[in-house]
Image (cartoon, rainbow, N blue to C red; front, side, top):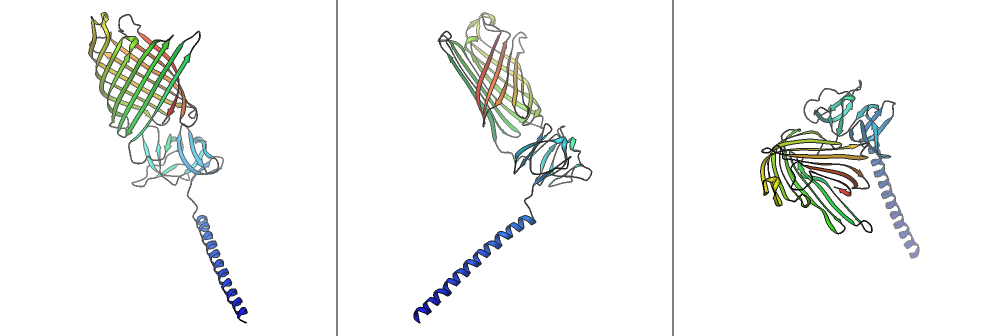
Length: 369
């Protein structure tokens, strides 16, 4: 009898444990069902594109530029959609819309029954409805300005032995540090070559510029450039200048800016020069011009860039210097890229016995950051 009673207690205890497990599992099931039901009743919000052929695509708007809407989906990643094939667009987060004439507006987007794009700003009255064809670019609003940077470094080296005995080394670096309306730019290059173990090129240049934007287009700037070239008999050419600048284009796709201003230049040569009145140095007031341009082509298949600056001696019209840097960058993998660059420098009043021009072609591998 005692044994039977003991078995009965174990049976009741096991039943309670089983019942507890049942209620735990039932509770978990109800919780999961409730979560799924809530998600069904209030699904994750998503942007939506309706095409002219009736197709609907849900995901997230990334950007719009050059007639292509970049749209991110959960099943195909980022896809490019022709903007002229879009009939309607709805976004759940604000977008910054540009009409291409320096006019921008920010707000959530919907499309009216008439097919016009309607912006709903977080504050203030909404702007008039827009035709989709009026919109040129679109992107997520930028967060509050903080110091940021971008740039690239690229280097090249080659060595040939045998019938040809040459060594070539080059380094080029760009750095931009910015927090609008402040922009700092730094540039440097150095090239060295040997021909049959004899030095045949030894030149370098470094520059720094500060830009202070007054509007989206206009800015004030100040900068300095230092240059040396052993085979131009130039120990140092230092130039400082200030003035106004104008930014014609500024985007991830293309940039174009101009700078102009008065400056002061100092030159030091390796020896006294007859061309300079028997002096080994000279200094003069100058005018300084700078142009910077870059642009991506064919959905960022490659980038073309160009820089030129002209230094003009105000006191001597025959003394002027022009430097140009033109090339192509091609993305490889990750942040790696290859670059081909052509440099052409002109010195209208060179040192004794020197040519007026120098030109070079450089192929390098670089890293974008």
